[in-house]
Length: 344
Image 1 (tube, helix red, strand yellow):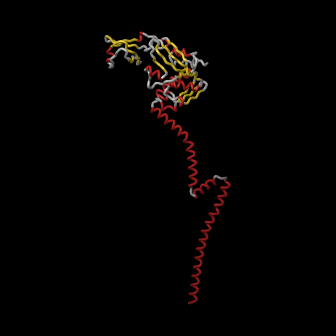
Image 2 (cartoon, one colour):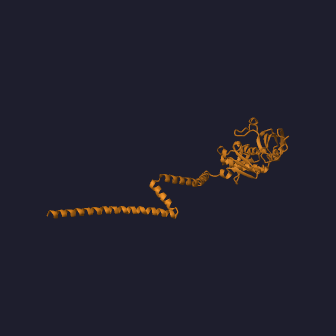
Image 3 (cartoon, one colour):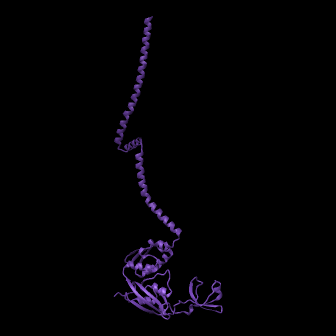
């Protein structure tokens, strides 16, 4: 037989009623809620996950769960001091009728009201009497001073660490699909990543849920608790969140730029070399040759000198041709003069 101990995570069915009147005020059963007239359209019904001793239910019920067996049904009676408390006369206040009328309220006995104190705190109460321009309001819990009867059944005792965390998520955030949440559990640390369900829940609700979850997980023995995103990130104004995302993108771009620039430089160098005309390639080759040892550079200079002498010899040949032409014309002149002398 499996018994419940303090610190265990269990799944519990229960129905609570007032002993004096038999009125049902709370239940995990949808059909019973409808029959009792306390059904809530947005309510969550079925076995509820709780951590025994963590204060997830009334003190009297929480204490009574220890030692019970899984799978059995029990009826538990809870006295007022461990239920909704004893009635306190100090919580019955008197107001003037004018205070209500100035707010457009016409009070009557049994009417639920909400009063805001000077400190900004809102108190819920119920009008007891209206007479002589005076209104008496009771701020005690409606079931204060009443004995309670709980019918309970412990459906399951959760053993798996990840399932325990899921159970706490279901308790605090019943509208979130705990199966979509990423959970990593260590011996004394736990990471709860709500990123996959961010579009399914209000950020403010999620932030409040994380605050409550942190105390629950600490109760289960975890010392280091990490939420993604955390409360500060969830409550950050949209403008600041957008700026933070831009900064992250810029950092990633800056990290990627050096590698991309290097690749681009290599590609540009290769393209330039391919597109260079033949003459420029030759110049590059000559430039490379100048970087060779001095002996090879000297040989290159010696090879260039004969080329220059060859150009000079060409000019010389042209000069000789001109001289030859001049000599021939002088001979012809002498021959003509000799012919004239003979004819005389």
